[in-house]
Structure formats: C-alpha cells, structure tokens
Image 1 (spheres, rainbow, N blue to C red):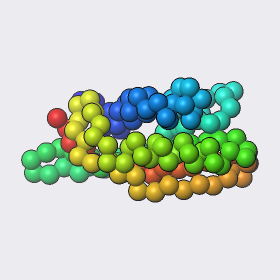
Image 2: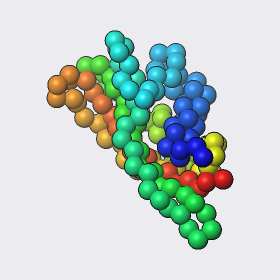
Image 3: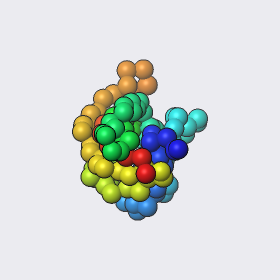
Image 4: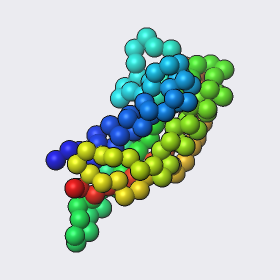
Length: 136
C-alpha cells in the first residue's frame, strides 16, 4: 500500500507542474522540494510538517492529513512569496487530485501565513492544508 502522505505529495507535484502560471512565477520550473535545495536562491517551496491520522470508518480505511508547504523568497521578496503561495493555494484548494492507491475525499487550504525568518531575513509563507483520503 502506498503511503497517503507520499501519494498526496506526488499529486501536488503533478498539479503544480501542470500549472503554467505557477511555473512562471517560480522561474520556469516547479521548485517544490522535500528539503531546501543546496546553493539555490529563493523563490522555492518545500514540503513542511505533516501529520496523518487514522480516519477510518466501518466500511473504509482512510486518513486525515494536516500538511504544510512553505514558500521561501529572498530579502525584499515578500510579494513574490505571497504570489507563489496564493497561486499554489488556488491550485490546491478543493482540487480533484488523483492519488496512487488512495481516493482524495477533499483537500482544503486552511491557512496562509507569512513571516520573516529571524536568522536569514528571508520571507516565508506557509500554506496549511487539510486532506482526507481513503484507501482504494
């Protein structure tokens, strides 16, 4: 059985890669990674913290995921980070994504928050997601 977390991440990558506006905002390629890329200048995004909890019923096995995607932009790049985050949020909120081994019941953007990193002074925007999936 495929992990519901990995299945959702793969579907998010596929949806983001297919969106020309998002790709253009990120400099010509989807820059969404599992870890911060080495020696890469922002703007890029990383998959953040995720929690997957059992959400099974008497009839179906399922999971509820609370996940984050964090967009990073260089100093003075708050508007770019927000533009990328807002585009990602628009793509993902209530999206009908296809997941390997799972069915997406719903996907919602629950919060968008922006802050400046105290150490690097880079802007970061966190997109908080809630997804419910069922095993197929």
